[in-house]
Length: 123
Image (tube, rainbow, N blue to C red; front, side):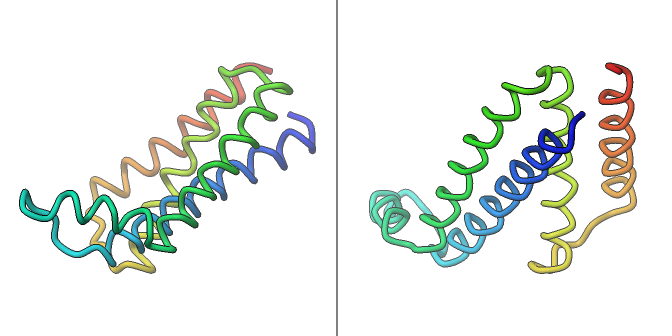
């Protein structure tokens, strides 16, 4: 993978994780959702700045991913983008205080090594 492709991959992963982060922040602002307030909650989603920022990040992630697909095989790009799951879990742990179990850490390890195997086997 060229340096330019690697930079696009990192940008896409960071944009995806940024989107997840801000969407979670926005979801926290919405409060409890139930049958009686679902329409109001949907309206609130459109006016919550964290959700709008999260969607913007996701949009940037899509743009950088399309540019990446123009340079590398999807069999490399798609698994490499899975590293965003690792960063999302760690972000949840360290910023939102999510509890991570040993099996979840093992799963993170599988994702990490799986990405390495999938991206290395194409060379």
